[in-house]
Image 1 (tube, rainbow, N blue to C red):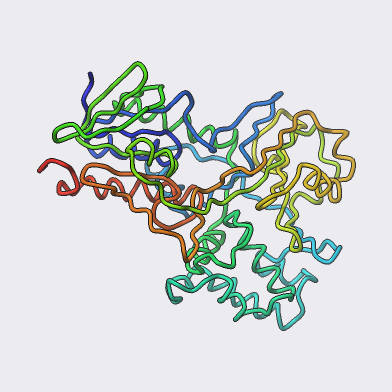
Image 2: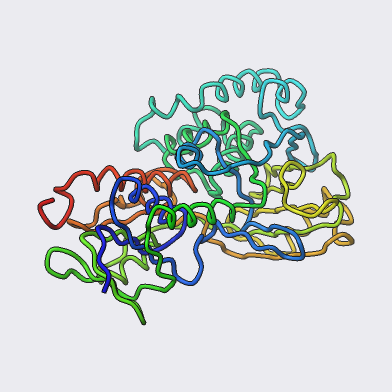
Length: 405
């Protein structure tokens, strides 16, 4: 039976990042990946099209991009430089995302344009000035009354940054920070997010991490450490970190699971032989929580001439509703479909950062830790990676272990 300083159970973005960081910190690490690493960051290649599990964008100024760059990962891709559109009241108009598009957009009147420009400029910095218990709904109503176009625009941009269908009960500070990251740019990764998964796994192996491609069945305390049980393999370690969902964590350590409200979305992922209207590569619907984006216009995701389009419905949507949305702005797209996949009720993040959400700490007990996008605060991949960074900080404190260092 092998022994390590740290065993990590789960190989999504949080688990993979934690394994590499821990190994680079000088710890011996065992990583249980299950049958396939990556979680929702996996990319499926279907008929030559690289289909992420729904639309993915890397926030260039976020902790995930910063950490992965420091680890030496290749994060090459394309920045969306095309025209962004908004759908509102049956019309299509330019979506204001910067000063130039705001000036050209007919979405807002003069007064609301000035108000929106001020909000957009200071969005990231606002997070440090609002009370932790302030909800997005309460803050947004101070800026724009319900039913106004400005209110619809702010809510739609909040959804776009977080995938949260109803941002009203979410902590305003969390949304502000996430939306503020947009100002630092986003990247659609060449080849999809599978490249991140593969690079992290390869890097873990090169750093000496022992990889067990099996599902863990349980974690139990043994003496001053822990034992992780599988069907064919067991291992022991001084500490354990579970990089899985809250319910899986609870099952593995035999304790109650916290009641979390997940962030869910539906995704229609399309591989197309052509885009019917290349002038409409992105549409954010202000009236219904959904949007579409042709990622392949800036990222290498298909063979020459092919394109990948993602249509996302925040919350519950049917395939038919998303197809109708795509057909509205890319009429005749069905004639060009080579590959298609619909994913209903995807869990995009395990815990919506609502004001009433329970805290989920990195450390469960001495020597027992957890990471994931439900741990701590934040959104999406940045939340997952931040939890891995926080884990390493805890592991450097020997009082956090079961033994005395």
